[in-house]
Amino acid sequence: MADDTLAIAGGPKAVADGLIRPWPEVDDTDRAMVLASLAGTNHANGPNCKALEKEFAAWQGCAHALNANSGTAALHMALYACGVGAGDEVLVPAYTWPSSATCVIHQNAIPVFVDIDFDTMNMDEAAIEAAITPRTRAIIAVHLHGLTMDMDRVMAVARKHRLRVIEDACQSQGALWRGRKAGSFGDCAAFSFNQNKVVSAGEGGMFTTEDGKMAELADRVRYFGEHREPSGGPSARDYALGWMYRNSDLPAAFARSQLARVDRNLAVQAQMAALMTERLRGTPGLILPAATPEATHNWYNYTVRFDMDRLGHAGDPAAFRDRIVAALVAEGVDTLVWQAFILPEMTVFRARNAFGHGIPWSLPWAGPVDYDPARYPVAKRHADTHTGMTTPLRHPNGPAVVEAVARGIAKVMGQAGRLP
Ligand SMILES: *Cc1c(COP(=O)(O)O)cnc(C)c1O
Image 1 (cartoon, rainbow, N blue to C red):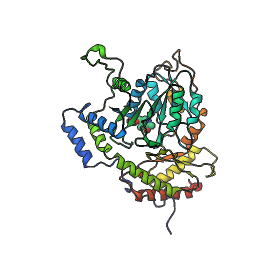
Image 2: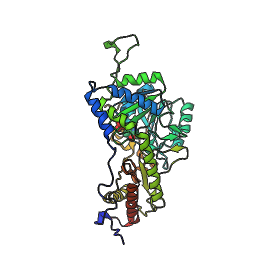
Image 3: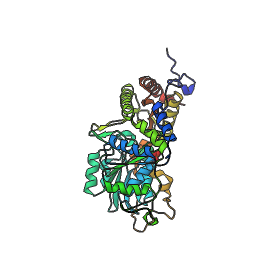
Image 4: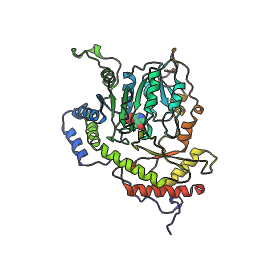
């Protein structure tokens, strides 16, 4: 009989060392593209940046795509393009990557958090309306983990209250809502090509929109605030407040060769997620990710939650979760507590100290906001009880990796009551 002693207690590992291959796979196409960029004469905002914009726009099906050096930069460009300004309020989910909220502060505007829906892990669409005030200008619709928000509801509430919608599609490239791609519903969208994302190029980002005027505004933020009339040459007067968010040519070359393989990689992720769900279904104490029928998940992150009631644990959920995760990691299961806190708990919101002097919250025309973490109990429950997986479900990994990982999870969950 197999030795089912937990690896954390000295037993054999469920997942052999070296079985899980790293993300992304780098092949000869990547090498050729990056070396060709290096051999070129423009390593700044070069020909690969321009070509990446064209190819991304074609893949996404959008009118305008502006390459930036990160998804966070693209988000900031979107805030500016939407006309969000000092003291305006912008709705953001209480649980997401910090820059989904800090991009708002970069425009001197004020994030207002909305609790999440436990099942989708996204902003609770039913809680949006109650968070709207006369100062609300926009919603950041974050499609977390690769699952889109209910864009019918988001767009309906935005239209009713005349709000802009910015889609944070950094994790959800290729995810669909009723067959339409994430990033194609709102006024503009941001994508990321950071190492962990589905197009992995080290770093990089993309701003997209259908609106030519918004593309022009976003481009100013990207490039020193430069603004020229079509007829005009450069002059010192043509520069307003701007940042420097252009990409460089080498990561853009890498992104192009990865983008060419994204559909194949997304298909692998979907197959592996389905297999993982099949193997883990019915595991006591494990809550599997739910997909809404209208949404096609891209399985960027396969996130599970531990059911503390089923596991008979009445104490600190996060501490118990951390013990389970430590046991999983000891088995060789590649899992990570991606985001252990909710955003209202971040120092910048506790201290309200972004630009100093309490700005933007102390602006005389700003309204009151309450960042008490107790207002976001669902986000807190999620943050305390989840763990996520990315690499085991991604190309070049396949069914053998998923089977081994699922065995490791079943082994640990079967003994969760006896963890050290
Ligand atoms: C990664 C990520 C970002 C930021 O992208 P970067 O390229 O790392 O700046 C923003 N929002 C979400 C939800 C992300 O996952």
